[in-house]
Structure formats: C-alpha cells, structure tokens
Image 1 (tube, rainbow, N blue to C red):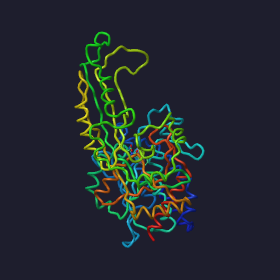
Image 2: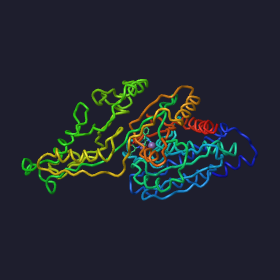
Image 3: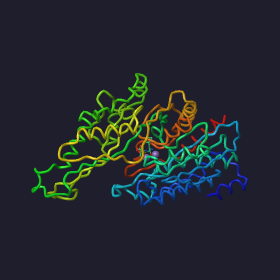
Image 4: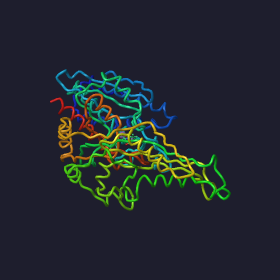
Length: 469
Ligand code: BES
Ligand code: MN
Ligand code: MN
C-alpha cells in the first residue's frame, strides 16, 4: 500500500487530490473488499481474533496513507486504533475523526444473496457485512488524508484518528480507555465517520442519537421441562407468564407502561416539532421500505417524532419451549426475552434499568419467579446543540458537495462513545458520515454505494480544507 503512494511522488507526477482519488478508486475498492473479508464481529467470542486482525488492517492502512503513530491499543475487551498527523502548525485546528471497525453478526446467513464475508460488487454497490456500517464509511477519511498528503505533502489541519472495535456491543471498555488516554484524543472538534447521509443526492446533519439500555428477563417455573398433559393445570407456564409480564410493559396502542418510564423525558418543544416536520415524511415509502402493514408508534406523536425523538421498548429476542417442527407437548421450565430500550434526554440507562427491575418485581405473575440481568454496553442519548461551530462548517461543506442544503435530522440509533467523548473532552461530535438508511445496516444484504464512497472522500477533503481556512 505504501509503495503506491510513494511511487506517484517520486515520479514527480503532480495531480490534484481529486484526480488522485479518481485514479486510485479501483485500488480503494479492492482494499475495502479486503477489509470487509475480515469477519470482525465484536459480539461473537469466536471472532475476537478477527476484530484484532481488522484493527491491524486499519493500523497498516493508516501508515500507508502517511499518517503517524498508528497503533493498536489494548482495552479490557476489543482493541482501539489511534493515529495522528500533527504537522499543520499550532495555529491550525486539530480534529479527531471517529469510526468503528467491528461489525454486527451476519446471521441468518441463508438470507444473504452472496456470503456476508465474501463481499461482492453488483452494479454500483458493494455487498457484505460492514460495507456501510462502518467499514466503508470509516475508510473514507483515511483516503481523503492519503490523497491530500500524496498530492500536497501536507494537510490543512492537524488530524487525529480514533477507531474502535467494540461499538456494536455498546463500547463497554471505552469510558475507561478514553479517561486514561486523553492526551491521544485532545482536539478542537470531533467528526464521526459513523452516521450517514439522507440519500445519494441529499445531505443531512444528524443532530440527535438515542441512548440505549440492554437487558434480559428470565422467567422460571418448574425445575425442568414437564409433560404438558400430566402437569398442565398444576403449575404455571413460564412462556405465558413472560407474555403477561411483557404485555404489562407496553400497551397495544404504543405507550410504554413501565412505572416511571417517562418521568425524565424532556418534552419536545414546538420548535423541535417544527424542525422535525420540516423534513419530508413519505409514509408509503416507509411502509414499502420496511414491509410493515402499518406504522405503529406512540399516540400523540407523528411516526417521525417517535422514530427520532421518543423513547422505545423493543423485544429483540424471545425464547421458550419447543422451537422445532410440529408439536412437542412440553411445559417449559423457563422463558426469556432480550430487550433494549432506546432512550432520549434526560433518561439514563441506569435509572431505566432500575425501573424495569422494580416493574418486573411488582408485576411478576403468580407461580413463577422472574430475574432481570443487565447486558454490557449502554449509551446515553446525544443531542448536538444548535449553533455548534463545527456543525455550521460541516453543513456548508455538505451543501457545496451535494449542491443542496442538508436536512436537520435525528436518528433512532446509538453511538455510545459520543457521550463519553463529550464528558471527557467537552466536545460534541459532528456526524460527518457517508452511507444511507436503506443500506441494510445490521440486516442481510448490507451494502454500500460506490458513488457515495467516492463522494464522501471529496467531502472529507473539502471539510479539512474549509477548517484549515
Ligand atoms: N451506525 C450505527 C448507529 C447509527 C444508526 C447512526 C443509524 C446513524 C444512523 C451504530 O453502528 C450502531 O448500530 N450502534 C448500535 C449501538 C448499540 C449496540 C449500543 C445501535 O444503535 O444499535
Ligand atoms: Mn455504526
Ligand atoms: Mn451498527
């Protein structure tokens, strides 16, 4: 990789950064294919080594781009990668660019049209797990710096990179890492290469992310599975008890009924609601995109308000009894549910967890016991305040690159480290990321659009130039 960069320079060819990006694009795409081939699934213990391989790939790629001090650094869990290029001069701002090299599990494999870790280009899309979230997107700023360094020998701003290998499991070890490594992360502004743009022709400024708490509820009845004829009517069924318990937590009309759940929620102001309403909403397109028969949210809120700015309660997995073909007359001993709640200001994962524990204790049906356990990983809700200076510049760059004014949006997703960086460095990260909502994040047939990959590279070059003045 390093040879290619140097070869251009020694031959004395002077290209513009844009020509550099164009003429090296097929190499960049090949490299992205190589990056996606590493199954860096942070959630699965058997892929722990692959997360490291992906981290080392990033280290090598940063070095090849001409970035200094690229290193993989340890945490109690999956590693992080830090690097910097700090030669623009003390009068120039220092920016910190964030992204993640871990990916979500790719199961169920049989729903993929091509294997998730054998990426394939079809048309102008690259298919594979992590293509958009976040391997393709986090590679973009590396390429933008490579093009500038190669063509001008310098960068308009000082740049630090901070990539992690545990975002998709809630970044459990990052608060400790960040607190212990503040010197490596000092910056004037943070840009996140995880996030996204509205669609291939329309930019957006993502001004809000939701928080997250993750837990499991396990309901236990008899000491082991029983014959459902011999014991049905004699002991409680944990599957049904869990169903009753879950039904007590959210009403069919969409309101969460966990005692105290909404207490800390800051109501949307008229201004917030007006800002959300300015972004077009196409119900039919949303239903077509999701394949759902109807929208379903919280009464009193538009679907978009619920999606972007109201807390949610979701069952992510539900298990009890016989799951195979046909009938098995069993009275299960246990039933369990995996649950995540997405949170908004000023809810905290810790308080919502405590409320759920108290709710389960108060509403557990007779004849069973219920146990709640917290899963690792949590996120605070994150809102970028109006008038944040990096937001204005990022918005102008997007407007120039796309030729249209960015929408101001929020998303229902979470990036746990955003609030940690805010707490530790006092900086609100600005989402400056490329990738689109329809690219099957976390789902089968995840893909990334190659024109967006290329356009994002231009945008990052222009961002650094605009910030360098
Ligand atoms: N890239 C997403 C978050 C995101 C989604 C940002 C949509 C912007 C638009 C991120 O990788 C993600 O999936 N985060 C997890 C965090 C969780 C495991 C704590 C999420 O939101 O589920
Ligand atoms: Mn992501
Ligand atoms: Mn993700």
